[in-house]
Image 1: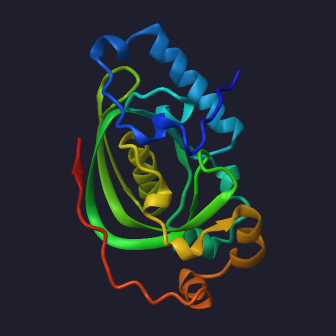
Image 2: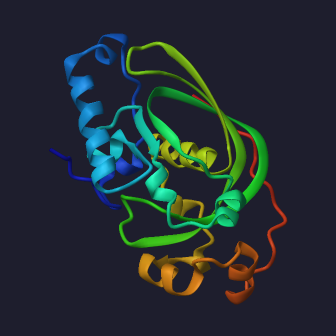
Amino acid sequence: MVLKIVQAGEPVLRQRARELTPEEIGSAETRQLIALMRDTMRDAPGVGLAAPQVGVGVRLVVIEDRPEYQAGASPADLALRERAPVAFHVLINPRLVVEDPTPVEFHEGCLSVNGLAALVPRARGVRVEALDEQGQPVTVSARGWYARILQHEFDHLEGTLYVDRMETRSLTTQDNHRRHWMGKSTAQVRTALGLAERQDSVPPEDKS
């Protein structure tokens, strides 16, 4: 069984999700939600899913970047994105801190903004402090693509979508991304779209 992934325009995607209580974290309902979110993420497929994306306004995300998702990318492309497989894990009531604010910009999509993608700047390195599915404290430090996934999912808990952060001129359908921009560097994309080279940085964040 998989859950319906709600799309942009649903109010839950624009509301700050609430924290789960210790009693809720240990409940059968939360265990079932985690299992359904895992199956829904894999079915989509996606590399992350936040509870608001399935209509539940709580601070819970599941993440998994499976090796087969990276099979079509060249070693050079994976290295450029600093992308490697990430095992399935759960983050509850996460707190995100930017450790390396160096801006890194790539096309990014979202299961709740179906069929579209755009250039989105993200901090290169972050740290997340959270609870796992057993309610035990966990700390995750990530760089590159894993850091991007964490920031994307954390944004969902804050009521933020990637379209709020994107380079608007770069918005594209997924089909046109594959036809025109796949394999091109971000610099090449920006030049082709008449965009100036980025000079800014991603400011440090400390959100709970």
